[in-house]
Image (cartoon, rainbow, N blue to C red; front, side, top):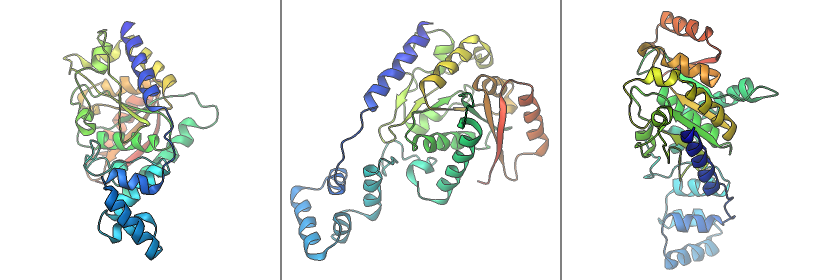
Length: 299
């Protein structure tokens, strides 16, 4: 139980560290700080702004001091809509919700977010986590889970992304977080600390990595500790998204879905067979977890 207490203390600590609302800052100040503009350069922008009637960002772009995307990013900060600036830790190309939040793919994730909210978080529905599952490796589960978690975090609610794929974990690499401790240690009963990582560019998103890759992932997931942990996490966070191993690896995905209470299935266009999808759905139907939907990944 000490492991649970340490984990929950981590969650409380990072919440306090990131829960303070930022002071309102002008768009000019945000642009100047983000692009390291000198006092002389700021004065040049202000002078051009006065003579041209342009806004600060437009004037800075006209002078070649910043790029258009820098202004868009600054506006997102002013309106508390976080996404990653180029070159940041979270600028992994797979994180389209963080790097290209106004693109077509990002809009599709917003549509999915709305549908999931209507099915899982509306009315008097019990609070649950959602496990992202698929029949085979390479279907895009991790890409999907990561971007879905970012989409939920951009609503402003505290969102936790859990890497429960203890066979081939990679969320720690995608988000650039420390993987020395994590889910596996908690389930093994070790007194782990610093297992929930806040993200500087995405202040409402937190990541729990796998930690040490264990030789007995299914047995760890079958222990009561995993169910207890998930109950604690759904009470501490507004949204909990869980990445899972492919169904082809064995029973892990079904155990995780049962502990989460809900699963979202992913199928890959021209790759996932109908029989494999039906078989996975049949397994899920025999667990306490409900299948809330199936998504086709076209990429």
